[in-house]
Length: 243
Image (tube, rainbow, N blue to C red; front, side, top):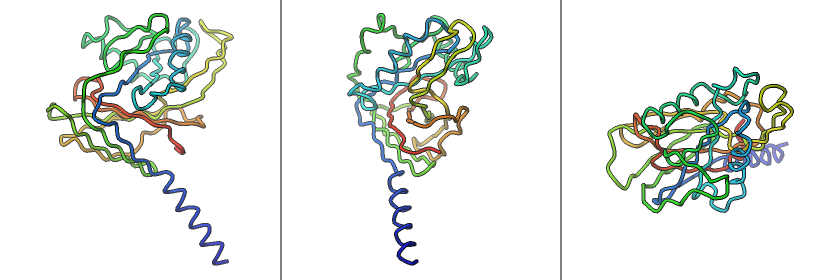
């Protein structure tokens, strides 16, 4: 009986160790690729397929950090997007107010806070050549601790953005512009939170999920200034376990 208890404890300990993640961005600036999309948008599937392709990109998480924000402003046309959040629509509108985008539409790509068009999805964004600073993230269970060492002096308050991503998601769309289409999704933001800091250090919990029927997860983390959603530095990883 004692032997069985010891073996069980060892297995539990190994599981806990496996769940502890240490991530570093490095000093070179990575690129956060944001796609604003909706399952109710007939022109969005090619853009989503393009974003999905980063799953097999050698630079995933080290050069490219893809995230798909599903917006809710197309829900009225007949299909409610179950991944959408009003806050994601507001984030896109904030970019427009700051003149980072000319208008609010889908599909829309933002790369490190700048509007970007991929030329019929035939190319990747240009890699960043500048240095931003090292973002360090440690995750134990659902607790996250982070610190950021910027290359250049920034404002007094920085925000840490944490997005839990759903991977390998699929939806059969029964109504609206995409009726009869099966949508395949990667990098979908299914949980999102942010926290301010005056010393570039953060301790927080991983965000609650607004959509939880997910089997495979990833994580994107980035730093931004207080009143500007533009990423300063970002990183990401697959999450071996979330629930």
